[in-house]
Length: 211
Image (cartoon, rainbow, N blue to C red; front, top):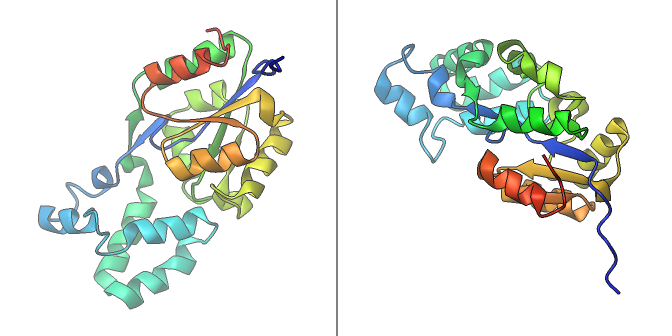
């Protein structure tokens, strides 16, 4: 006899690439020469912006990161990085199509709706200020930069479960990055790689979520 899957009670969402459309290029274009913007945003991360942001997502402050930027790439690039971070809301283009409706439908149906994001403690406020509906919809959010824990490490998911007061086997997690999906699965959370809101609805339905 096959054991029944426990009923889902809660759904957890990553932010960037799942709920929020984050585009680093949007925070730079119109402020700097296009050729320089293209180099900064290149796939090979020529000037290390993604790496420096990752350090901030892990808990480092802008003041702690800037000396490294200047040492590695010079003062001009360090000044651009600082400007980019202080205008971080410019890179938060929109809420992704269908995501807000999905979150609202889950909440209306009685499910817990939560956020779990790798994000700097210095810039996370921009997301809630630009999209205040997130404060209304989400029952709570755990931020890596505030906790100095981060996906895909197990302790970060376990902290979120404890903080939210929810059970792994009754929860679903969506993230656009495969390793973060795998990390959630390793602690017993049902996890799916986010493609779009329509596919997320199908994934939820496969676990018996009705919205």
